[in-house]
Amino acid sequence: MRDIRHNELADIIVSYSLNIKQGEKVLVRGGGFVTLALVKAVVQAVKAAGAYPVYRIDDETLLREWLKDADADMIKLAADADAYQMELMDAFIGITAPENALETSDLAEDAINLYKVLYTEPVHMKLRVPKTRWVVLRYPTKSLAQSAGMSTEGFEDWYFQVCTLDYGRMSEAVKPLKRLMEQTDKVKILGPGETDLTFSIKGIPVIPCTGGSNIPDGEIYTAPVKESVNGVIEYNTSSICNGFQFTDIRFHFEKGRIVEAFANDIPRINSALDIDEGARYIGEFALGVNPHIDTPINNTLFDEKIRG
Image (cartoon, rainbow, N blue to C red; front, side, top):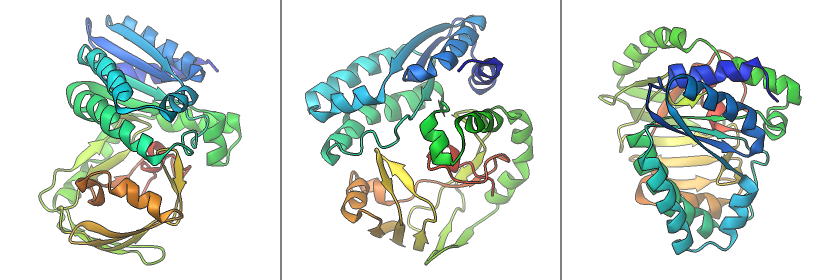
């Protein structure tokens, strides 16, 4: 799939999201050859800005095969190689294309957790995120269309609508909400099932997200005071984590910490929460403001931007 909308989206990424300047080094990473049309458009836009693109195409089926028998030394080798490349970059553009959101669902949890600790954490969380300007996005696939309950063509049209809106206008529109959140102390959430959650956001910075690091974008986030979260939250949508689809999720909090966790696979969700000490605490509270996203599609990058 290649049409003029690829060029429009590439221009937003390069000119608005990252503001790429002459002479900068930019890593463009595509998730499978289905992303090739957009990767080409982004590479062209980077070159047009006078910068230097470096490209790479990954594949989720190869990642699964690689992780099946991976040990710590193998993962560390890949992490060291990619960290070296990332160190050279000024900016990073990650375009993933989930053709099967559950591709890694049958891998051992130990392998998934090892990858997160030895690869994702050092390469992305400790290097890419703090040391480069970055933006990540999904590419429209049949899998995403099916998850959204749309035809492939209908999803492509919706995708470009939600991704290429006027982010400059959004940036101005969220300013009153930002001021309100900055003045807020107590938050109470009532919702489906047993949901009755209270916490404080007093004194925590409030950050609008309007096209800078995610495409699509449209949220404004802060975080609870660490030990202020108490009560229960029961989610009315599913969530895919590490290739596994969790449903019927319910968390019980005491003094900020998840003390009980329930889902369709209780041992698995607790394993995810036990990966480190911080995993049982809430790191973000956000409100979605993208006017074109009103229904979850089981993909966090979109679902967290749902208006309201």
